[in-house]
Length: 420
Ligand code: HAM
Image 1 (cartoon, rainbow, N blue to C red):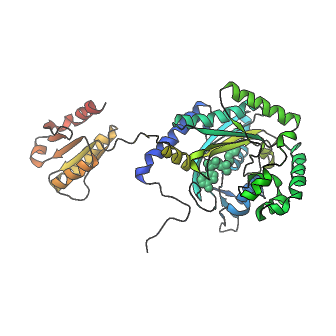
Image 2 (cartoon, rainbow, N blue to C red):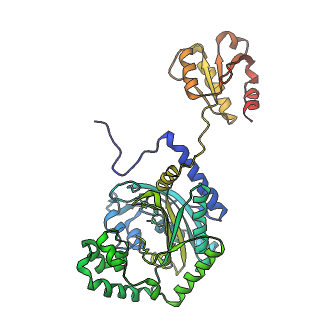
Image 3 (cartoon, protein in one colour):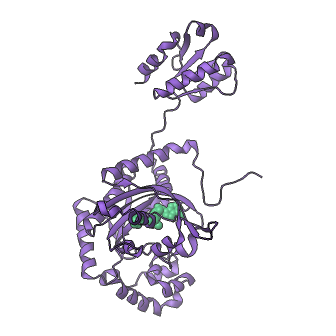
């Protein structure tokens, strides 16, 4: 039986790779322009980091982590997200010492053992950015602007920004109490999961998509009636910043995120055409996470975006992605005696930054020409033993079919003229 990829994972094939290069390059370009520097953290961390960072009652920690033991019995987990690892690295390397504001970004695979469906995978790729050190709403606005700028540079349109505040340590307990009072009376109308959420964290109920729960959720108390002065001011200043830089948004008091570390700002960017899994990115402020992971109290804000979902939206919106222009020169031989010379010429051409290919299967000249045609190369160099004795090769222009003899020493100059 043929081996298959594990459920919820995907191969990215050579024919799809141009899209990924394009997306990664645009991401790096935009985030660097916004002053963010790339950081790379390991694919797995100590399990404890995610339990403390993401929160024990979240679906991610309770049901979705790929956790395993190393040979010494230590518990490790494939990273389900990038924020806790970035904060761990920030603290471990004392990045805050040199810069009171650390602006970091990452691109990489994340792992969540979710039920696979369109747009939801067990290994998926995210890019994300974290600004650690500023409490000001203007940095929340910058993070949102950076995320939107990437989508815009990629050509995406009609994305919606949903905005909310989830309060802080001071005001959230009152809101949670109000939710408990409200849902407590209607417990029997909620689904089994929500009844459990009611006990553990009633805020999570707001995220339930089940119709019968939605009917109850629709009329629940709004967080905006419970925000403390500090959180309300933060939210209003953020709105003001966004209005001023021309970013439109929809306030959604029911927007809660799947991770527990959020305070104040929470946001999501959705693409309607994606259906059920329509969030192409999300983030928010997490003012207590640094402290919870052992650092001193440090405010922070960030976002992450799902790269598979972005590519899917680009496809749905008919956005054309520039593709690699392929091999430029094929070196064909009339007999196997010339393969070493062919390899040497191919390498010289490649060193000049021009892509070159040759035959490695001992094929006839006719068959090599067929390969060159299939590769759609503009030029073929043909090495014949008689010509080589005179230090010459034949170059064939595959577009107009014209063939000419040139000196071995002139090959690079000829190709450079053609390509640069
Ligand atoms: P998140 O909302 O869990 O946030 O994930 C961010 C994005 O990753 C989602 O909006 C979605 O596009 C994509 N995503 C999540 N799960 C999957 C999946 N199973 N398959 C495909 N795509 C998925 C975070 O991860 C936070 N760390 C964001 C953040 C950064 N908050 C502050 N800083």
